[in-house]
Image (cartoon, rainbow, N blue to C red):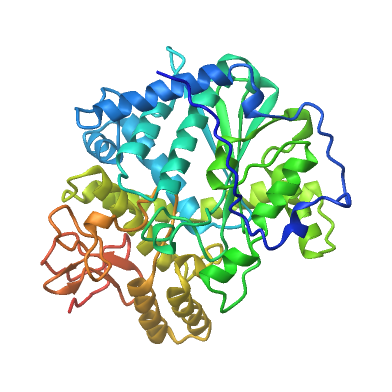
Length: 481
């Protein structure tokens, strides 16, 4: 099969009406960057082999899409079944999935998460029994009929997985980081991007900086740093946010600062990453996060001192945030293991996000690490009101606002499962199964409600009522209407 040719893209998809943003005329104040040793992934000597191997892999997926799954293909539904049957490895894999999704769902700006993958005896990368190859296959196969740009992005992510493997075997990641940037694409309808689409956080056009390297142990570490891509103001529309976004021009400046030709669109920033020597990134992902802020400062006329130690503090703060939702993760795990109605892998993913949304909304009343805005503007107003009422001791009214928040909340996260799939969405926007049956409502109404003490309850069996709060240690009397 022919190797994938690098096709030049003529028209940039960033706002061409502001060309002044793309020229680095004056040096950015602060520490200067030395471009020595920084180079494009396209210039790596093993890149042609990587692309050829990737094309063969992609072709094999197309040929076997309708065939049975590969032996090492493991999806979330398989993981839930194996965990129920007592597999400790599957339980760890399930917890990893939930932990990754909760971090993506709840924390959208100045947050850092870390994932470590291991090499098995054959040299393949994976974690808790699931290979990276299996993850990438699932990402391509489970989400058909998407916008062409979004499909390009998924394919670029799969290409990077192949790059990481080849860079690892070539020893490239011992002394370098592979740095790529995931941004909200232009030219894609809003409904394909947000809570009903691929899970981008559109209120701030959140971007993700991903840096991957080899640890001394031989394992592979990927850090992801999340940052707002625009200075959003109340009343901004999706179109106005796209028009004034600063993330793309900041990235363009950063590439040119390193003497590299910048990509022109969202798939390009994933396909055309950089190898940056570790001695230029001593603090890992927070270094490019700081550089991007410096470039944004220059664009927006901000005079802010960007200290490396302040960015290092983000790592510790991120760990505190993630630790604060430990109980939420445990509840989501219990809910998934107790849900025997799941029939397809996508249902399992959607249900996981539904639980993460509901338990996150409930936790946000007391957990100030969770910003209400991550659940959408409508729910955010209710959560903020409930917090104020709680502080003033008006608990009964706070519960009413939290119930409204539950009903109106949305959540977004990478991978497209945070919203309903196009083929599995009812007219009311509720998650439904493959037969079109609404999951979160039945003849008694919503299966979700809060007890008098504010704990989220989800009736486990459709059309059956419960009389006590299901939250551990509560057991308050409840009346389902």
